[in-house]
Structure formats: structure tokens, C-alpha cells
Amino acid sequence: MGVRTIWESVGLRRFLLTWWPWRGLSYVLSTLLVSGLAGVLLAVLSLPWWYLFTRPVVLGEFVLVGLAGLVLLGTGGPLAALVVAAVERLRLRLIDADPVRAPRIPLRHRYTSPATWREVSYLVVVTVAALPSTALFLALVTVGALIVSPLVVAPGRPLALGLGQASTVAEALPYSLAGLALFPVLLYLFAGLAGLHGAAARGLLRGPSDLRVQLVEVSQSRERLVNAFDAERRRIERDLHDGAQQRLVALILQLGLAKLEVPPDSPGAASVATAHDQAKQLLTELREFIHGIHPQALSDLGLPSALDDLADRSPTPVTVSCIVPERLSGVVEGAGYFVVAEALSNASKHSGATEIQVSAEVRHATLTVEITDNGRGGADADRGTGLTGLADRAAALGGTLSLSSPVGGPTTVRAEFPCR
Image 1 (cartoon, rainbow, N blue to C red):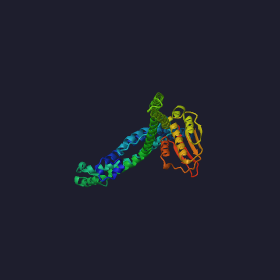
Image 2 (cartoon, rainbow, N blue to C red; image 1 turned 60 degrees about the vertical axis):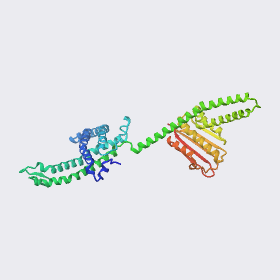
Image 3 (cartoon, rainbow, N blue to C red; image 1 turned 180 degrees about the horizontal axis):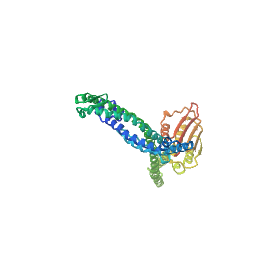
């Protein structure tokens, strides 16, 4: 993997042979321009306070002008910082391959967002950064003068070179060699200062972190998958209900008519009667299958009616309490329904329960579904995939699913789904 920051490049053996030293040099030298811009903006915003220090004022005037300065800095500071921050995010590309995203702050939140005041803090930081940047700039000028000294020295006109002076090329040559030796060291210093300044700028000017952005993208993609899966279930249910089921009903009618037309004592009568019975049994199984994919009652009448239908189909007596005053989104209703369906199926098959209680209610924009049975308990979600799959589905919607099943019972399955 390639080097992406100037800090990583400093550890390279071939550092001086890459472009990174010159990037660091460009970054530090351009800091002087940004620092000058920030300094001018801060000076303008501080004009009321400069007024206080340039002439004697009475207490009332001091308080009034001081408050005016605070107001000017508080209102103009974020706007000035916005300009400097935009320039800095462009400059950071010199020393860091990963771009710094600007936070998306609505205008109404511009003065209350922490990101805004981090930008104002950077306005001060970049102004102070002019001091070390200026020092290195002067060092660069000095080293450059040492290097070119043999070219500019003139006989009879001594040239001051730091701790000494030179009048001839021979006398200036040692200073030039010293300058050449110091220049690589100076490049490392520029890279180090650029790295420090860049780290401070990235820390203050960053938007959402890459990890946070990735988590948001993953959450959104998971939710889109759940929505697509739910839509596909609805499509399959509709196609089976309107297509295969209707053709099967027509087939049963045809077999019924054939059964009536064929003489009872004929050789094919028994076969027609058997085919007619098998077709009716197949229709019953298909209806159960369609209901399991996506119940029509859930789409047409909503969660309360769908839960009542589940209770009627359950071999174990079920008491339903559903307080859902209005229709929820199809994804949320489907998730709540299938949690109840899976829990009822598990309780009827494995728990030996004689009574099951189902409750569903919407409170604080959250659908809470709870299923409790009086069975033997000891249920473990890790031993089956049903509840695990439902837990993953709940997590994709930003919800939770929990299971409590001590040995001896009762067993309680609880799921919560935000009703966005």
C-alpha cells in the first residue's frame, strides 16, 4: 500500500528522493499566506478591542465597546473561519492523500454546531503557526544564501555568512558545503512541522470520520436490503395469489366437473376423484404457503388484524393485546408480524406451553412486540436460525430483539422497532 501522509513518508529510506519533502516545504511556506489571511481577518474582527487600547475610556464605554467586540467576533468569526477552513482543506491534500470532508451544517445550526467553533479555533491556531513557519522560512533563506555564496562573493567585498565572512570563492566554499549538508536536515524539519500542523488541522476541521461514514452507509444499505426483501415477498405473494392459486382453483373446478361427468363405476372415476382430492389438498397447502410469505390481512388491514389471524391459526391458545392506533410502515409491520409468527411457532412446537400472551404497542415512536408463553423454558436462540434471522432483521431496521427463557419458564421474546 502506498504512502498516504507526510508522516509515513518521513520513515522512508528514500524520503529525500520523493516528492514528499517538497510537498512539506510547499505546505509550510503556504502557511505564511494562510496565516496572514487569518491574521487580517482576526484583526478586523478585533477592531473594537484595539480601540480600547489606543485611547483612555470610561467604564461604561469600556463595557459597551467590549461587548461590541464580542458580538462582532461571535458573528463574524465563524464566517471568517469558514473561508480559512475551506482553503486549509485544499492545502491538506499536499501532505495527506485522504481528503478532509467538510461537515454539512445547516445554516440555522451554523452558530451552534461544535464543528463551527472548531473551525474558529483553527483560525487562531493557523495565526500562531506563522511563528514556526517564519522561523523555518528564515532558516531556508539562510541555508540558501550559504549554498549560493560562492557564486555571489566578490573579491574585496567581504560577504557576511552567519558566524563569519568570506571575500573569495575559496573562503565561501566551506559555507556552501555546510549549507548543502544542512539542507536535507531542513527538509526533514519542514516535513515534521507540516505533519504537526496537518494533524492539528485535520483534528479541528474534519467532518464525519471515515468509520462513521462507513457505518452510516452500511446501516442504510442494510435497511435498503430489508425494504427490497419485503417488497420481493409482497411481489411473490401477489403473483402466487393472483396466478398459481387462481389456476389451481380453476383446475379443481374442472376436476370436479369431470368427477360428476365420469360414471362412478368406470375405470377412471377413482383416478379423477383422487386427483380432485389432491388438488384441493394442494390448494390448502398453497394458501398456507402464501400466508407464510406475506399474509394478505397484514397488507389490507394492518398489524392488529394480522396478529388476531395468527392467534386463530395457532394450535395453542393465544391472547392478543394490540394497541396500534394507526398504520405503520410496511417494513415495520412485517418485522413485528414475523417476530410474533416465529415465536408462536417455536412455542407451539418446543415449549409445551398451554397459554401464550402477545402484546404489541406503539410508544414514543417505537413498536414494541412481546410474546410470553408458560412453557418449560430453556430456549436458546443459538440453536436455531429463526430468531437469529429476526434479530438481524431488527438490527437492520435500527431495532432490537431479546430472548429471556430460564429453565422452567416462562419464555419471553421482546422486539422493538423504531417507527420512522
